[in-house]
Image (cartoon, rainbow, N blue to C red; front, side):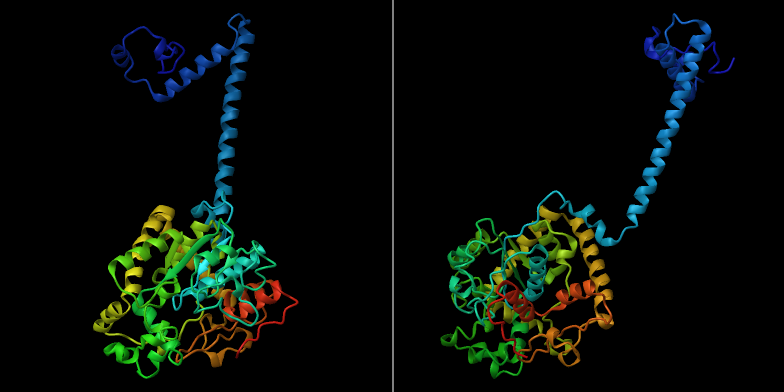
Length: 453
């Protein structure tokens, strides 16, 4: 008699009266297949009426067994089809996989945003991201009035610096041009549910960039030939009575937030930092720019392409000065307010990363962002790299030049289709040209802004 022959007891073990231990000793060779068949036969016999004629009853049992087998085969086929469909989906372009890591599809994107554009902190690249989002979502930007290019900077912001404030009061979605932060006035322009954020940079590199960019503007930077020379004796060149012109020479980021960049005191510093933390939901760190874009995207519930970027307003390598370690420490002392500000929000930045994104997800999203950036570089950019001002052929894409800095821009590839060309132009358009473009769109009856060559 085989293990599963008709003589074998096919009743499930739970209905038998013998103790569990005796069952295990009674049939030690019973296979798992036998148990499965036993349960299947028990089920079939239970469904077929025991009062049926023998032949009819047998036919009923055969039909049910065949039905179960066919049902099993159908399930297998459906599973195979599901695997094939999943495989084809996984071959989709990288940008379409972003929602797998973002969980943004269940949220509406944030559209009311105030970005405090600090100086020499990669803020021009962030501004380009916001301008592109503005066009994509058909939003309204609080733009500088008339021929202004800043919102009253370096003076504290006032509503009078916004074009159309009186006629468009309460309808602005985005504010991102340079201004000196003045919360009561900003709140008059922006909706109550506005998301406030800004960006900081290590003061060592921020001051070095400012020195080159504002060499001919800031009185403190005009005489010293290098930043190293300036740092050897800062008070020799820095005149506090010329503070409004020398804002770029000391604690410039602190000044942008609306505070006195020449004041000192631990209590003052602590109070200001606490106030900034209450006013802004997010402070990004430009030294970790890709990570900042991932955090921004998750905070605003945006798509991957919304934060993909090309570096804008960056300098050529030959205009970047290297500071000795000693002079780097001198920068931290000279710009002590900015250094305290940076240290604090560098810590909160990584806390936000853990809370909003998570480190594992951060790594995946940074990789996706860089892959998409390279993909767009290959599509848009001639030679795949930025050019100096003399090499840029399209004057509309040539960035504004300042001081001793050689600001780089881009040439686009030839023979792009219209849709791709428009997308690439937005990605590389310098801030002054882009702002002027949006101004003409929002105020078509106003004279266009005059762009200096």
